[in-house]
Amino acid sequence: MNTMDFTGKRYLIAGIGGIGSAIVEALYDLGAQLVLMDISDVNINNIVEKYGSDRVRGYVCDFSDVLGIEPIVKRMIAEVGPVDGFVYAAGLGSVRPLKMCKYDFMRNVMDVNFFAFIEMVRIISARGNSNPLGMNIVGISALGAFMGNSTKTAYCASKGAMNAAVRCIAKELAPRSIRVNTVAPGVTDTKMFRDAQDYGAGSEAFRQIEERQYLGVCEPSDIADAVVFLLSDMSHKITGCCLPVDGGKLTS
Amino acid sequence: MTTEEKIAMLEDVLEVEQGTLRPETALVDIDEYTSIAKLSVIVMFDDEFGKKITGEKLREFKTVGDILAEMD
Image (cartoon, rainbow over all chains, first blue to last red; front, side):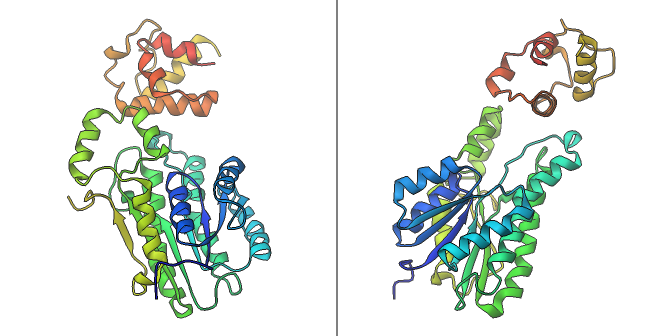
């Protein structure tokens, strides 16, 4: 049995940024049906055009509106059917000095990066919304769940929250054959990274990163590979964990 | 917004004593104008003026007056 054949399986991907679109590509190439959720209808249309609407469908969703998620997901399930897996790849890579981290800002980052993730998992894991034989869920976390840096309070807190919640959700949903894990990318070549560089992350800071991330900057496809592994039966005894895909950065 | 109000806002954002900054003050002469302070300036433009300041634009600012001129 080929555990990397996703033909006939349906995966929901929330967030079609650099990493999200690489996940879409990887799963599509392995035969999966894909349902996308993203804030941008342009993003969605580009992908549906690229891969064709027989295997890819999209739904616009603003994850900062946490209470608005459920009706969208309900409509989606009614139209395409229950899912075999779910990846949460939406997120704000916010950088802000603590002095300016007022409640509204903190809450917005937590809404998109954490509360929306919990809400999605809550809804997708309800009976009838996923394959009764089991389902695999992956959240895109960050090394920021383990390590801190100035101006990253909201971002790191949201990723720490995701990892802690996944440890609980994994245990609670295990009796229903649902596995839940996160992936923590190191520095990955996406718009989030390029935006950070633009603000003078600085060549010195980047040199230090290159030293710690000694296998080099990740491509979005590197992250997608790990996500595919966690969605596949090859990882059938892995749950509740955070898998770093970080070129060695966390442990060096 | 008057120039005085803009200066007061910038002094608050940069956490320098009120009355310290003048339009002609060079940014390199402000000890508090660190990389974190520069981020605060970017956030200020986004929050208070709805403006996205790019890294390139930020690097073009040489004096307090350059920043004040963008604050509208």
